[in-house]
Image 1 (spheres, rainbow, N blue to C red):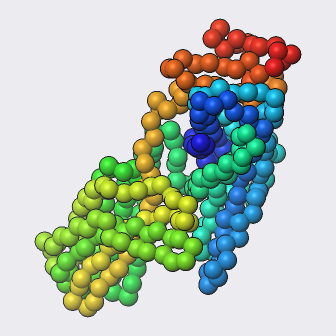
Image 2 (image 1 turned 45 degrees about the horizontal axis):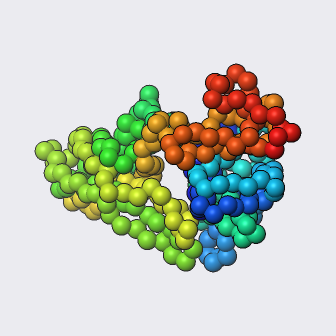
Image 3 (image 1 turned 180 degrees about the vertical axis):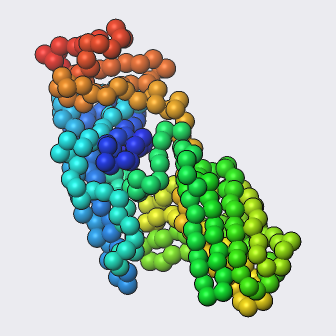
Length: 318
């Protein structure tokens, strides 16, 4: 069984992750493991998905090696030193593109049989931070100003990157000549698939301002029961905040997109092996069977400055 996990999707610095290879009790022969990065694009009005490989990498696993049962991890990373082409970068939804995202595909040959799994991911622009703790508080207040003929709506968010379980604290300021009856805030989730897109309201908050005209108020929306994972038949999951002010002259609608992700734990980083050094010959595997770390000698390529537990092995013993 194959599993993929990504630790960092900041392409301008590096893309890093690991492959989890689970082997049964029968002795298996692993001939090779391939990692490919795909760019997936869909044009508005077209059902065709443009799916093209951007990066392809093969782990040089020795075909003569016999692996016993256990769980093995293959860390991989692509830094910015020529391994990631400039075409792999954050792209905004403009110029007719409906969806732009990427996926990691891992294929493995075990005992002559082909096994494959893939994991979609999106590359966020620099304005949206993606630190290890899940999100980072922005220093400045993000605001969206909507000006009409007789009204001005200003929406302020303390940050633009939220996690499941957070509370979305928002401040809204209205300046209008019409009398305000009610203000409604809705958090909307949009799931895009190959054939269609579906939107649903997740959270809703209503308020009645004390002042009839100019209004400035704050409200909170809890972010709960959301799914930040993308299944195989989905292109993307996006969120937006809708603000509707019911006035005597009509409704005023303001919307702003936000990003919601699941919290990441730093404890998971202990499960991953150290970064392969410059003296490494081949990528290495670490087994976690029986709660003890075992390193098959044929995959040892660690530097000497690590602990004695990761002793260097002579490549001639493979």
